[in-house]
Length: 430
Image 1 (cartoon, one colour):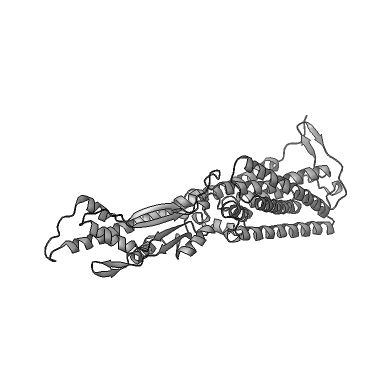
Image 2: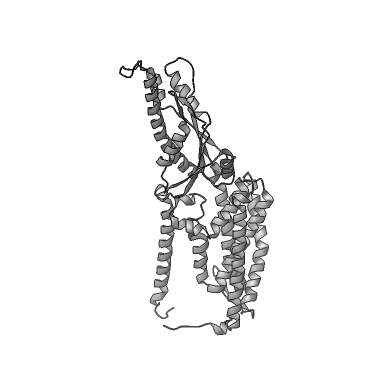
């Protein structure tokens, strides 16, 4: 079988489109994951100083205040948002997922430090003063590891400084006169004085088994986005094929039905209706599979309802984009919901450890909004302040935008007489 030569655009256009899409993919995905420490900005950590102070070496002293000041100096302000607060506010911030961890200095820190100094020259059992690092594992394991690196590095410098000051204080107390040398202190005591602070790491509300170390919310979000995105693609293709606007091909079987006289707006309304029926069914399937796999879900009805809303919002918008741009809408949807969505979701790498452009994308990207809602339901008791209220309103806003955009653009096309029919198809000979 012979025919005309294949035009250059038949093979050049796919190469250009695929090349540009893959370049965008590599820039977004590799750019947000290769160097989180370098990209760190506004990483939220709380500092709680409860120390009431005591008398050391005959002088009123509050070592907790000194440590708080040192931490503020040692922790880079351009990378970490260090919030000084009290215990009740810190717990609320942890409960709502607003901070990734906290440094807690107890109220008897200076007193215990003084006791430790005395115990270095007087026999007796004594415990080192404690500073607690409280992590927030429900935010995610990666955020926890970054929190520990930041806080442990800062406290290591603090421990060294406090140890040097305590050693000098003990040395001064042991000197009979300022001009004479102090009696020697045992090697064990010297080691204790050199690192007097015991840093204890405790998780705040550890996650139960079956959450994938805090990743189950992200992957559930991904399922919901894919259900709306791919569901819209499937509904769009199958409905257009049944209405005769596109051919149907399965292997060697090929059929192209006659075009149905139906407006663009009515076609879109039909697709939206099918999506509205599919969404709760898919949401129920996700919930059933998660339950079958022993994934802990304390608020199943809430998860079902919100997932259904998110699937409808994503699917409606995706169908509207396809109605507006035709085949090119597939690329638009892919970029909007997946290419730009995954790096800015904050599900695996926290937003504060990605380039600032990702933070800007997260203000409107659908995946991040849905992730906040699902994470709040699964990990934070479905509290509105933990992200559920924000996720719900943003999802409703996305749904409204999708409905208005789709209805407006298809009604405009219909008024202009741009109907989808065979007699309007253009054949361009180049």
